[in-house]
Length: 174
Image (tube, rainbow, N blue to C red; front, top):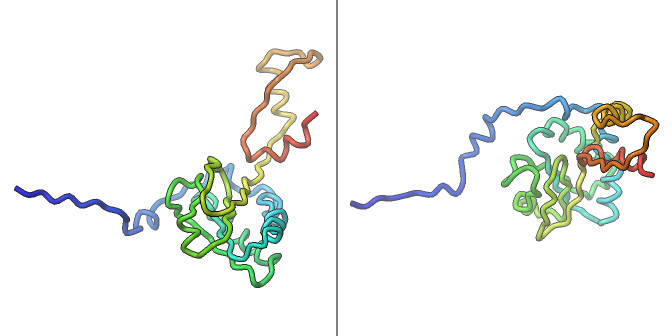
């Protein structure tokens, strides 16, 4: 008795079209799109790298900001720059999708959102983590309360943060 086993190397894509995406409240824009997603800095990086075919990679939870970001970049880049929005990544959304970027012959990928920072083998990457608001005073009060340290006492504390809040740590370093 002969058995035939087929291996699916690709899907119809129906799951990507019908998948429901829940956007957490933390992914809602809390300020100007240019500030939250650093469009001026991104434009400067694209220009300084002399990139012409730019792949903009968004995870599913940030697709709702892809068009405003595309528009902001398009308005500030030369007309010769080609921008492509990538979605439905080949691997996890935290990884740079070099395969999809190759389909448009991209010379750089701008990766938005959370990332595992896995090294890429073919393309340079511009990482834009996004900026999420955080109330530093509330965090300090909670740290003091939870560590049971009097506000007048001093203690050495190692404070870690997610990349979405990295921009605020620069103003608090001593």
